[in-house]
Image (cartoon, rainbow, N blue to C red; front, side, top):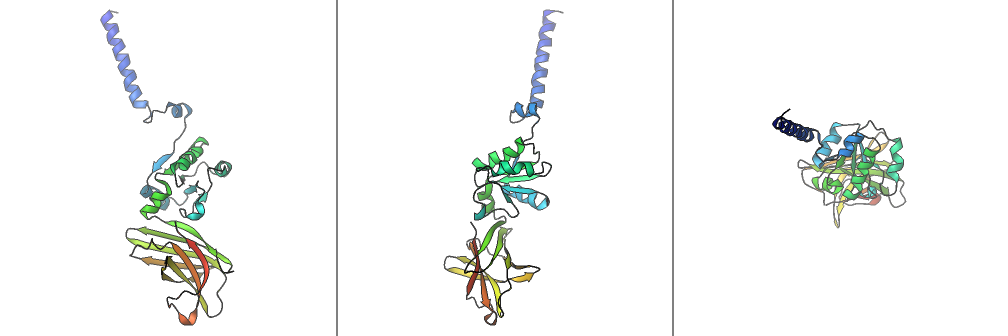
Length: 247
């Protein structure tokens, strides 16, 4: 073989190596994942996360923050990554399911999502921008309602503001009100407040559904009161039964 042919052959081999590397090299340059055949979690924005939730009823949502009680995405589970709760929960979770992981900050949601991936979970998404972005975009958030004034009960309140429509719901576990009384919902912002209507008993709980074309997100406090039936909806709150507050 002539010297010129050898040179051309060497050049051709180099070109083939470069082309193969371009085709098969991962976009993030992480050859470790190829070698170990590992999956990676996928970052998605708030809109994509909302679509994922609405389109996948089997989706498992994991909040890895310590601030779950201050507000969270409805139907999410709380496994705080900082105290080992997520590590303890991993063996009990189904690796074949799809997961959405979020927190209030990247420093928790990133390692949280990575823990699932490292444990062999293959369908893992992370909410980019975390809970603050979800909150800002107006997607549904949920808070617990706690009993006050020696009443026994609890509840959950949800609110959202999507496509110019404000929605607020309450599901409360309460004993039936006294004779001549009913339960009423309120949204409060400092000294400003308004009624969101009567709670209606459905099966074993009391339910409230409120809808408005106005953005009412500045009214963060949720109050349920027991009112006198004869007075009706008179815009005068009486005895507080449950209270909670959106972040």
